[in-house]
Length: 255
Image 1: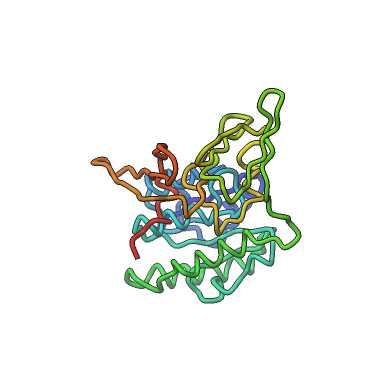
Image 2: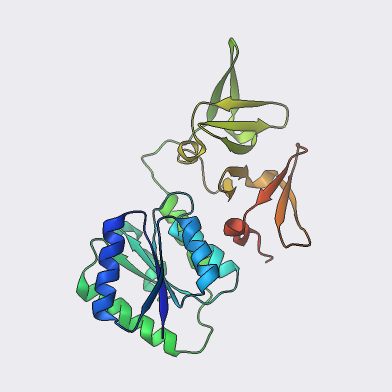
């Protein structure tokens, strides 16, 4: 019997998709419903479903992040992205490596996706290498020509204001409602959560490596894996050793 998880941070779309799948694919077992990306990744690890229906925009890990982590872990889990934005249906979808559903999900479109999934499940393991396409999809999703990138970080420290150039920042670390900003020779706290700061950072230059950590990619000196398989990053110009969560370890697969 095929199995699946559904991940969406909104209750109504999640329950509606489950209802429609029950009608169009009654033999499919929904083993978990998830409200955010971390929960989805845990469910995939625990249940090893055949299919994951992933909302692209979720708190914490996005659907793209979850799919990247699954791909990096070598699991075979067919992905169907669910999105409210038609522009997200880029070339990677058309290549047939994975599918997408546009909200609100139409029964006819879902039936097409179900038919494709059944065909793929009947095929032996393998298929196209979707890593490059997934990276391109992630890049396009993060692009927003109307959004100005952050160039300077202004942070108050007592009765002074520090001005830190973004290209000098080694990493950003979440600290509750604040964010710690670290350079090679200074650091400060800004009154803005990491999630808001990330919207203004160039995703090609700044990589999220943990739910509460964003690192400038060229500041990473090396990565180490301990005996438990946990990955940590050493940073140029800093004594900090930063944890890399399983969800983001896919960024560092050897070429």
